Length: 194
Length: 291
Image (cartoon, rainbow over all chains, first blue to last red; front, top):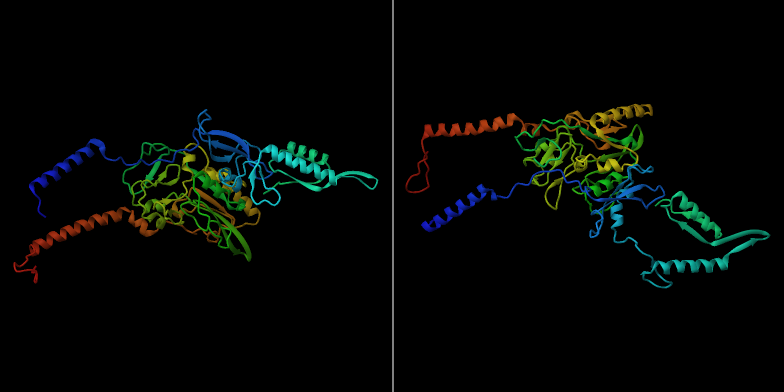
């Protein structure tokens, strides 16, 4: 390989400049090893109850940001609440993966309605949903309510059943029972497990 | 190591000694298999905390799901169907890194600082320094580390070093609804395990034992095995140890032999030159070379 005097000078000058820069501290620093940063350091904590079953485990939702006006919060982690008497910090596999439940694209966030013969669900207001349920319940009760069975007063409404939610306290369970029984409904169950 | 939040005890492929003056508490995780119901809350909690999501696979006819540890699944409930004393037993093992006192992965690793052992007993991988050679997967007596296809770096359980560094328990420990997983000082965990053994022997598990294998210097994930005489039934090695080749590869003897070989070759070269002189090439070409 033939090198001209000019080429030799260029290579030498280039090498000298490069090594000088490295010596002056312009080389890329080697990444320092470190334990992964604790990801909940300044998140805001919100206490809640797991929505799955009737055990009702206490959970803590860890939200991005400190709830400042301009910070749009987002739940980044869910963990058992160690101060909750029911679970004392523990969770089942479903509870431990609540984060994906919260962010699931299939999560139901508002009432939806699919009329008779329709194929599509469409979003409706809470007013519409509650009025429609009340209307249908009233119509059915007016039609099928049994006041007497022979001579005995029974006040039964047997054509409709009621399924209540799982994440209910004793108090809300008591209220549910009172309201439903007062209407004469006999079939009442709770979604106590998933 | 200025940014370290946990004190380093030793690091892979490194001759410099990390600062050793402080003495920190040795921690351990106790897995009491007799109390495990196989709910997989630990698996969920691990994935959630470490921001891992394994691929949704297909069932292979076993309750074990996913089928194996991976770069996205650092802990795995293995369900072993075994006949013991003439009865079919469903033995559950919460598999994952056992955080050996004498870690084979760290011994095998040729990348400086890619595998660290902290003074509290955790063996942690530093993916920034990992070169993806996979020696640790061969060096591990428990077959735990997994090479990622995405970035060619090796991942495994960190014992939630990021949680322990701020004084929290690991995510799997916190989630466990039956209390089968415990966390505390190694001393306390062994004490608790001894107590549990007394219970188990009373209940008819005469061979119940603590799994804290001495071949790897003990582990920082200690197990209580109801059938302690048969760790293989759970899928655990009976006598895990760092292999002899690996021991030799990192020993002073191997280094001395390497240096000795280098000098021997040099000496042989000099002797050969003194005896036979330089190589002479005849001017007409390369047909014949005379020494």
